[in-house]
Length: 263
Image (cartoon, rainbow, N blue to C red):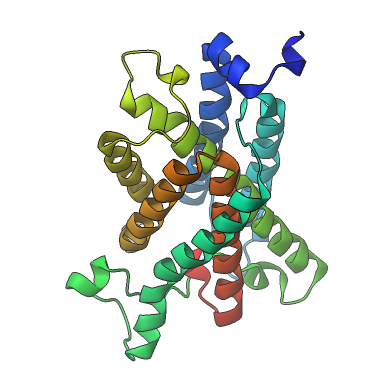
């Protein structure tokens, strides 16, 4: 049997180094582009009416580049991922994704319903009650409804609902849950979705801090729900579907209600 024909389990057990690279590198490259965005904005960004769009809104070209490069890497190592796609668990993932993102969006909805203005403090701030209107908005750069606007928006949804869903679940659920459970041993041999308090607390905590403090409460609840789905379904594909649905709904909410700071 050739390497290309082997199933993900045999690749995981027989090629641990390549398996680890396949799980870590796409996520690392994805995060590297976020660092690039910060560096470019700090040293070359220019928030001025006369600034060209690529300097005023560098996310409008860095995000699409990030999306394409990361997708290429995921495709390169696709054979190493144990998705085990299932209609049943994918449907469950859809429900979990809708519920999870509902909790994530609730603080922003409550901010408006309570008639709050400006920046919140104390418990409201830590629960995520914020305006969330400043963020990714291609209409600012290209004009509402222009071809460039639609291209940027489509790529943003591909990034959120496809790339982020894949690289984060591959990293957090498929790799990190195994690694934190047995980092001094043969962690790659552990079955997917094996429950432990250590993996729950560490992976959920890391998932939280990978987001902004405003999102900590939502990320904790969402990460906990994903953990439940992971150990219940033993199905990475279900976790990816959950993440994809959640990010799709969040993006639709953001552009519908002008809450661009959510994404």
